[in-house]
Length: 496
Ligand code: CTP
Ligand code: MN
Ligand code: MN
Image (tube, rainbow, N blue to C red; front, top):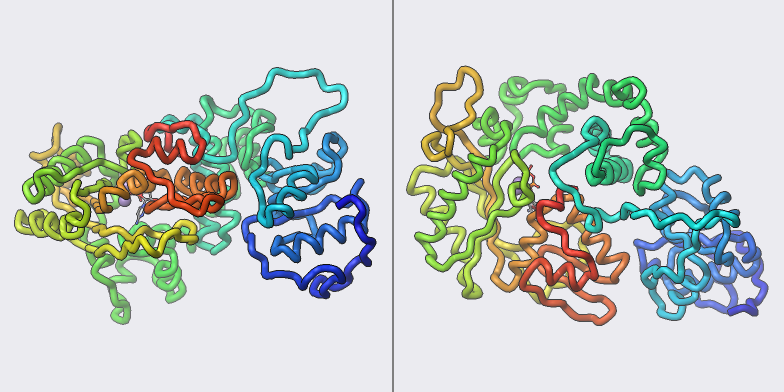
């Protein structure tokens, strides 16, 4: 590799280079390489670029936020880091800064290899005294322990507003950046007192830091206030708060000039689907948080129904309440049976039973489309294929310890509660439990970690090792963490 032929600097990227086959289709979409020309030299850089592209790697000509791996010939260099900091990357800490050995390893393997310590270029100043290693906060939520105690709510609330605004405007990258930043702050054991204290934290870019600075200085963010006072944002937030109404529908209604629920309900040309009709009908109840005591009462009802139908059925709490949250927007459960296949009809029978008791206000049952031969799925964040149902349950005050938390002027002795049930085959139980326990950010990063650090594919159904080309079995969540080489994180530590 050291005696590289001197290739002319390509003027057009699409021109095939002599010596290599035409540029392959980009095979590794998740990896974007940038080769640092300093030390390497122009011709060698050009040669390595063509080599990588011929093997299906994406090599960027320009260093931008899209880059995932910065490759340098220098193995230890403070000047490289100083140079890198000169680029205003929104979050340099999420980029892998590696030496040429990672590149040559990847070329030899014909795929991007996992970054190992020996590949990393350390940010070492020449005369820096050897400081005690600080416990670095991981960029992956699945390597952080995040309880429900959030010491940085003033910041994370602001980030959530910004994230949602970007979501409404379909700017996914920025939305995710703010959700990541919020997630990092949630994992901290204390409140951030000054922006300088965030220096070593991952996932905090210039924009997030500017927002934090404002909040620290003035107690509020002007950008957030502007969004909150924006009519479009307010209306979209209102519409999406209805069960069954997503950002697309909300936007459609807004564009048609509708601004309130009465506008929507009075508009004759709007056809509400069944879910949305129930959403409006029970809006007051299901937009109000469910308490732990109410979740417990729902658990008792589901428990009775499931066990009347199948005495040896297995029922487990999942979702936010399993993570120890005090309030939730719904209550989530997994139900299954030890006999493979029997779970297929279980949900239908449970729904039937609840219906006969007059407890069901809404049912949306989705039969299983799970097909083991279609695994592994490469779709990131795809819905799982297990049988599931989204319900609205009638909960009587008398069933709740301490009674219902009633809103003012409400004399009813019941409330509507959203309930989700999922029913995987028993041998998929651990994957489902891990997938449904959440949080969404924790799940996202588990999958990202599996893919980028372990060359594995994880979803609610299975874990697939791409290197060994085999599925890894698991009967407990701990088995899955073990396969991934991750420390076990308890459900109550997954509130990322
Ligand atoms: N989930 C899923 N597939 C679905 C629905 C949900 O994998 N079809 C997962 C989500 O990724 C999430 C978990 O189930 O991690 C729980 O979802 P949800 O009830 O929406 O969120 P919670 O974390 O329980 O929060 P909340 O208290 O607001 O209900
Ligand atoms: Mn939930
Ligand atoms: Mn849910």
